[in-house]
Image (cartoon, rainbow, N blue to C red; front, side, top):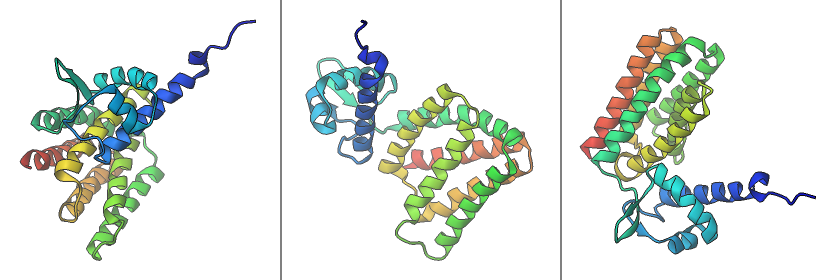
Amino acid sequence: MSQPDPERDGEPLKLRERAYASFTERLLAREIRPGQFVTQRELVAMTGYPLGAIRELIPRLEAEGLIKTVPQRGMQVAHVDLNLIRNAFQFRLFLEKEATAAYTRTATDEEIAEQRQRHEAIIRRAEAGGDETLIEDAENVDRLMHEMIIDHLDNDIVSQAFRVTWLKIRLIRQYETRIQNHILIPVMQDHLKIIAAIESRDPEAAAAEMSAHINNARTRAMSY
C-alpha cells in the first residue's frame, strides 16, 4: 500500500498559506514594521507558526518583494519609500487600464449598478458628517471595485499579482496616505467617473478615467 503524500494532501500548503496570512496581518497591524530586520525565529514568534513553515514561506515573501536578504545583516521587511510607491502604482496602472477596458465591454448592468450604489452611499454618509465605520467601509468599497474589475478577467495569475500589489498599496496608505475624511469624497468621485464611463460602455474613456484615478493616488502618496 502506498504511503500518504502530505504535500499532495495539501497540509504543508495549507500551513504555508496560514503562515503567509499571519505575516501579512501583522505587517498591516504594524506588529511587523516596514524596514525592520527579522530572523526566522523572530518570525516564528511573531506569526505563531513553526520554523519549517517559515522557512518555506520566506522564498514567497522574497519573490513578492515583501522581504529581502541584506548581506551580513539578515532579512529586511520591505519599507515604504519613493521607489516602492513608484513601482507599485506603475504596476497597478499597467494592470488596471486593460482590465477596466475589458470590464467595460462585458460586465453586467447589475454589477455596474451595484458599484454605483456602494459609492453613492459612502458619499452620502461622508456629506452627512461621517460615522465611526465610514473610513473602513470606504476602504472596502474602494478595494472591492478594483478587485471586481481585475477578477473579471478570470486570470488567476493577474489576480494574485494584483493582490500582492494591493498589499503594498495598503502599506503605503497606512504609513503615508490612508484614506481620510479630507480625501474620501474626492476618491469616491474619481471612482464615480470610472463607473460613469463603464456605464456608457466606452472602454477607452473608462481606461482613461482609471489612469487618472491611479495617477491622482500616486501623486498624493509621493507628496508625503
